Length: 393
Ligand SMILES: C[S@@+](CC[C@H](N)C(=O)[O-])C[C@H]1O[C@@H](n2cnc3c(N)ncnc32)[C@H](O)[C@@H]1O
Image 1 (cartoon, rainbow, N blue to C red):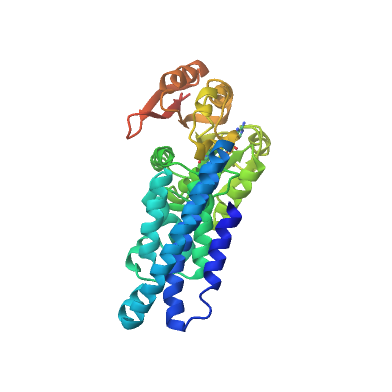
Image 2: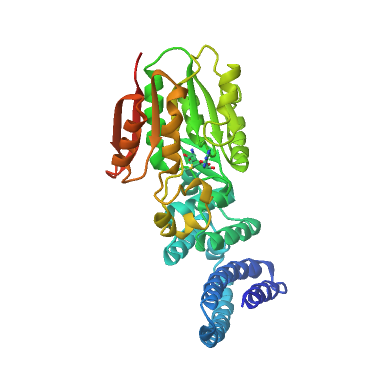
């Protein structure tokens, strides 16, 4: 099936070469339109083919009828081309794919495929491919798109239609109004996590001097970078168990020129911090502890993991999502040890799952280190942040 799709595409392209130039342009436009139709039509049929042998006959039939349709469109196209020869201004306007036409096309395709936020996704992909900001797509609606850009867009649109996350396709994600590099080695930062960054920044701004911060489970380093950019006294150690995620984190630290403010360490939770605290190199004058520990750990339970959307479950690292049968493994381990890493009156801030507030509160109480424990909900009224303030001496 895939081969047939490409044959249609290439035959169609080659057949225009004997025509006069103005007709070739017109023809290329119509053909590009048909090519996209066929690309996506065939992609759809290919996917259906995976669903079982009994669909095979139906698809062959559908392919035949698609070919018939193609022939009819082609005949109409010949007639249309003759008309455009008589009407050059129409020819000028219609001769190529523009940003507007592509945007409309991709939005419709994504809507049919059930892709999340079809317009936003289409804008992100298109702006990535043509090298414009999203807002510039709307100020340059009539800008033509080159053949190379069209090819690249097709490839990405097809993958997005199979629910590959847009952020992995573009290699970029926005968090706290900053742009981060992301790859499938790290989780894509979520808007909900901005509340954790916000609370951390507010807390640090109430304090003076250098503030020693630890970002456990840093992933692409979005929380640590957001803190460093918005709390000038923050000196941060960011850790992750995944080497591959830390490589992405390093690229982001480099991008924002924060190497002197953010130290990246690889290892299991607090393990890599122990030697750093021992030598007092990374946290000088610190009472051997942090002013703030933030963490957005994996917190998805086993049944929740099975029920995750395809674009999360099949593409984002399981290590970043899943935390034991009930999703509490990492919180438990943090609560067991956190006391020794916090200065008096310091804070621990955790992102938590939508219904984990009560159980996390209990875990924090059991830790016995905190004078004050607060659970905060997000804008959707889900439990989102746990803040615990360590006792003063
Ligand atoms: C939910 S992601 C959060 C990433 C990032 N902080 C964010 O908010 O987008 C959790 C991260 O924890 C890391 N991780 C999982 N288990 C860990 C462990 N035992 N010790 C340290 N990091 C761990 C994963 O590699 C992943 O990068």
